[in-house]
Image (tube, rainbow, N blue to C red; front, top):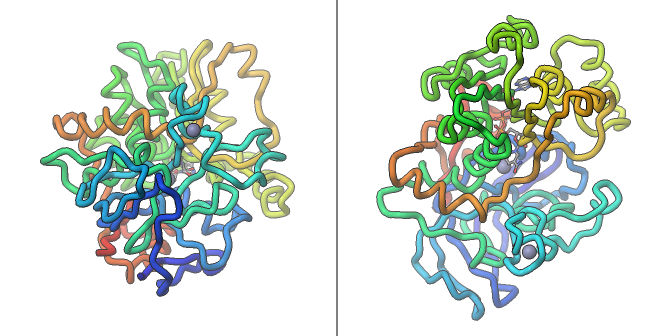
Length: 390
Ligand SMILES: NC(=O)c1ccc[n+]([C@@H]2O[C@H](COP(=O)([O-])OP(=O)(O)OC[C@H]3O[C@@H](n4cnc5c(N)ncnc54)[C@H](O)[C@@H]3O)[C@@H](O)[C@H]2O)c1
Ligand SMILES: [Zn+2]
Ligand SMILES: [Zn+2]
């Protein structure tokens, strides 16, 4: 089959590889009908995740048709149209039973993250060997592990371009908003207007937030946040964010702050940003903490800081004093797709949520390398590109 493989930092190539096979009785094979770019792929391509190897197939936001099932697959059948959560979970361990799906104990056989994280998180499709070494979705076919738990039938009337993001961007954004414990009338500020940030805003609205403030430096994305989701916007290249937030919240600060940017945050021109860049380049620090620091400082006393952006290791100058003395609640995690996906598909079917506006670029597998370079440069007004392998 054809698949898009990693060939070194920022190099992707369409290649012929062997078709995936059922390896365990709980596996299924999916014919991929749509798969998308995600901001997490940029961390991989940028070389920030050392355990990706040449030849690995990337991609983790996807959907398709079940074409084969292993003997122990009970809930799925051939021909079903499903969306697949990007995180793999076994459905039977302590964490799965407690709905903390991305912490599953049984889907990541690789122990390499134990030293960095203390315990090993779940596997993720197409996201390096540290995350389990599973082949990704930018391919004609993909092997689904623990298929019964990760693949969800797409309801009638929901299009591919609506369903595909319910794999990753939508549950991530929804979980980020859910983690904010939103009360009616709350003010929620979101750093980052990529797919994840925009879905966090849409979800915050659904969960009862009254005022949403979107922060980014890309005018087209801020425009989308304003036009589609009714957010007020702050362009951090033009406006001092902490000062603006103070003003927009009557001097109190947002009730909840969401980081939908992660480890590659663009700095705000502060000394700490230059320091991050140098230390990250020298591999003395894994992640850049500009958004973490700003959001923690901006959050109102007793508020919530919700982190959806991916971080991999350490940052310096983490304002623990502000977290402690302002009694902030900090919540985070790789998305619990299995918990949220059914509810989100229903919201889409009921026309209460429509993520399809994230699609700005469409191509087949041939066009994937070019689409990623556009995505990395954030040119042509790109938000997310979708690929149709079959
Ligand atoms: N927790 C999860 O399960 C999960 C799932 C998917 C993605 N993610 C992570 O969420 C983050 C966002 O993903 P995405 O697909 O929306 O990415 P994206 O790259 O499309 O968007 C990131 C946005 O952040 C903006 N940005 C950069 N620096 C900023 C700053 N200092 N302040 C405000 N905005 C800034 C960029 O301009 C861009 O618009 C990534 O870190 C990704 O890895 C997490
Ligand atoms: Zn993702
Ligand atoms: Zn499990």
